[in-house]
Image: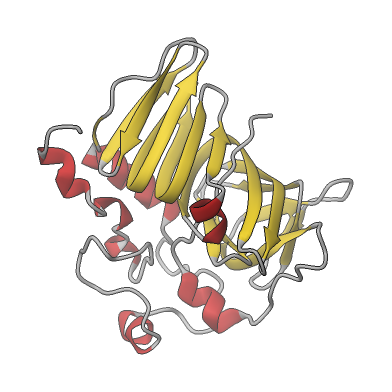
Length: 265
């Protein structure tokens, strides 16, 4: 199983703020985080246990397998102020999450077998960095945030802030904000190129809530509610994090994608 090491924060954070006050107990090394948002159907399977439906505020543990179907999405909140959004038709495993709050350092490993996931860096990713290994590539990330898609033996990495190193046995490429790299099985990573906005929009749709889905919040999230909680803004901005309020405005990847018109550094 490939290993993904990263940390981030993603869409539907308002569901977490309203739906739970549960926190990760750092004294319990096995605990990885809590469910900040969830739309049916998303399940978790702890090691040696049966699969269970995920609920807002529920703890997730190391080595737990997270699976979503065609209508399921979820967000995992970690105690270093990071999170991971898992899109529809995806499978990931939280292999490891270690965080020393007093030192502000830690380690995170997540396996991604298929699908789409979005990460925005918390404390761990800004200190020790993050290392991602998909079925076709290894991705090293230092701070910032990315969206990654793995489908049909291809991994696509879109960098929204910070930088990433994408490598495998055939070569290595550095990817900066506003750019993406595609990696096919048995081939070296392609050259970095400006984020494909059509591809990005398709990935974002897989991450965002649909129709009447609310991310598990008791009160459906709205733009005014987000504003009162000082979460996100409704305009598109380089500073706007990934809060899909509403889902159609979930715009993180436009992050500094305006850089797509600039020569690659």
